Length: 424
Image 1 (tube, rainbow, N blue to C red):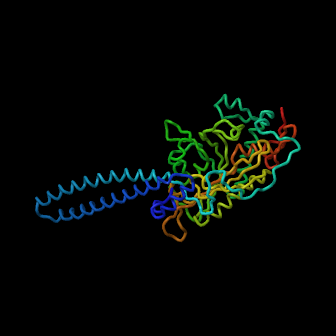
Image 2 (cartoon, helix red, strand yellow):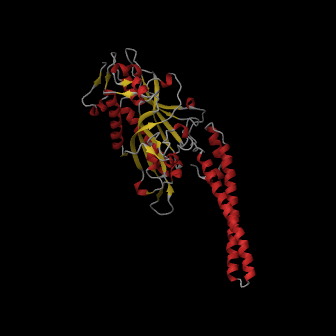
């Protein structure tokens, strides 16, 4: 959430940032109008309260009973006016909070301006796509032939965009998760195993509510929501907390299943297991001091890149344009891996610096070592990595002509002696 003072004092900056995101800046005007109304109500209320305090002292000093009675009656009317203003103030402050909550974060100056993902910029590519002396097959052919992905059972159990991983396929997915978590622990992250359901206030704190309400799964009897990403509960870990400066940066990693009600139409983009309503992901999350967030962003990006490199995947780093930037982010870099079978770059991570945007919504601060008032922390998040797209790349880039999959060396400690998956 943006600071109301920033919106008030740098209105043109906030308005322009929304335009650069291809968004209507009308909410900015609504915020300013509500903020003006709020301050007017406060001024009126404070004037009446001052008058009541003054007259109350006069009543206490007065020896004339009639005069006291008249002033007491007058102050009852003032009290009613104050009560009405307080009620009006509550409504306006609620509306103001809602209006501010839908204004996105401000992109950094070095974020390229663009309409959408087509205006993203490839920063660098690491490695070359693997060359085959045969036509590599996509995972939606490899999986069934190896008897490790069953699409029909997923549809039968739940419906469209669900699938079942079986045998060595399920084990390979688990191996990827374990490998990623262990690697991030070595990189300096603390592993957490958070709930897969959170309260609405936790989603608000992370910036998911109210904007993305239609994309979330909700328990209709309780205020519980399925997590769309582990970023949400990792934000919730310290809601309302004041951290010590000596404990920063604090870095977390976590595995969760993720649930999203994505609207998907038939076509190449949704074939196989690339997009679904449920998927696994390993997340990285950092709390740090404001002056350290740029350095921590570089670290997180390097940590995600190392994950791709150790899996032997060709990858590229892509900077998001303003039109593709997420709601909470100042700046985001995507990591995309090459998948030889479907012949495309698949996004497996988005590494974002969101500044104090989430911390302000969640009221997360730190206490400076030298003293003074607590300050908002900065938070950063990134996938490390997302599945199943990483699984797709591992399968398609490690296939042989007969459809056998060679298990990458780094995953074999979790594969129970399995070094390859062969067709049935």
